[in-house]
Image 1 (tube, helix red, strand yellow):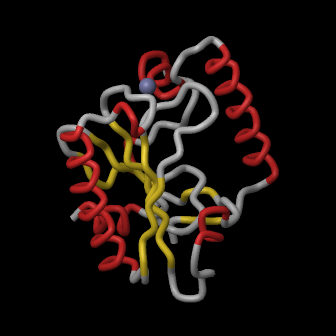
Image 2: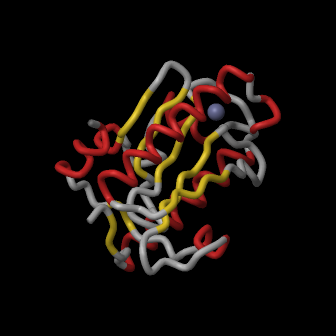
Image 3: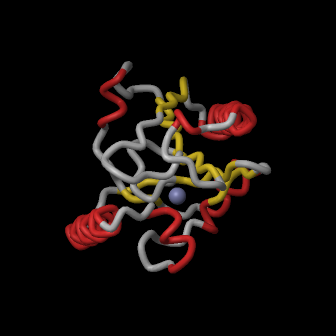
Length: 162
Ligand SMILES: [Zn+2]
């Protein structure tokens, strides 16, 4: 559900995208804004959107560490949390609370961890929600759990949207 192991081809594709991202950052451009304008960088996430408000959009991560690993992406560009207006912060927390409760309700997650890094050169403000399920390691090691690839399970995604 919502996640499977990556094939060697998919691992290779992920590396290639990573190299393109680095190229764009080296030109002092934000990869997310670049992708929004020109496309061709990240896979379209439209069918993975589970929540949206005026300031942020939430979608299932393409390379999740656990099922329903979710990205909360600011609609406007801010480099990181230091540039974030307080009303965007409020919208982030609204989204985080809503999505956390949905993930617990629909998928039975025990906890949902949240972090933001926006590291390594140019970046676009985003947060990660990483659900912890029964049997997962407890604590910060979950943040480096091995990545899989997202599976589009329309039924579950509909429930998460609900
Ligand atoms: Zn940006």
